[in-house]
Length: 328
Image (cartoon, rainbow, N blue to C red; front, side, top):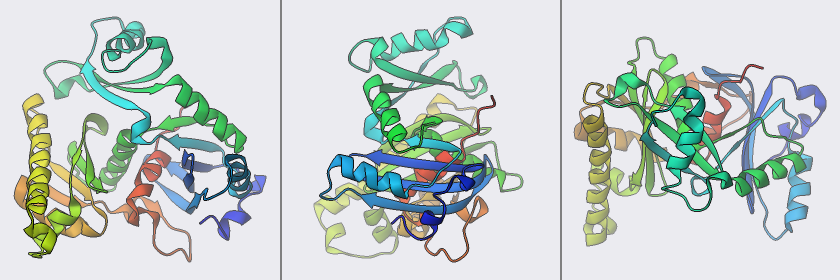
């Protein structure tokens, strides 16, 4: 919860140099506050979750506004259901027309008018593939507008809006920067609540992403030779097979698309099952597979136990903190 240290940070004296990353939904707020943020890491100050419970929306807004600290920069992270992320062939148009052309092409995957959506385009490095392509993040204007209004009401006008795929890219990039001699092509797998998000980066740039079913509990139990009732059922066996199939399908898809750019290493976070999952992936993928070591990237305040990265729900927020600042 937002308590103690947070109340000491509500004064304006703590604005400069502080970054607040938050996920705001109708019934909850999750946040991380940090300073000295960069692509290499950050110093964490406070983090927490507030639940709306039986409060009205207005009462909940007033409560969290009174608790949240001031910050120089505020970043909102969208939930996966609030946007679409697409990888498509880059239209053959001049650079100044790229966003407009991608907007029209993205309409094949969303409903409504192109003018109803906010679009961000991330060019993919041409060297990784046969054809140049782009990654487009698309969110409805109504949602973006609502999120911006909500954050203004909280006293935190948004500097930027982030999504899980790019936040995970930021975490992976920072991790590799902390490792001397790290390879240029790397993957990151974060698994939680029966799903996984896998990304691949080349020279620190996001080039591939895929979400798929991935049951960490079943996989870890299989690695540990735990013959639980669940694994012994048809449902357990099917979940195990589907998880491994989806993992291999994701890796094979990258190899098929970019055969000249093989993945050299993979970082994994699966909560309390991370070690067991890594043991499995080393055998299944033959890749150099290691856990994320967030202590190389984030410094913790004195007296704070249980760092936020122990809860996968905080990982997108931690990654958002590492988003490079836009120079004015």
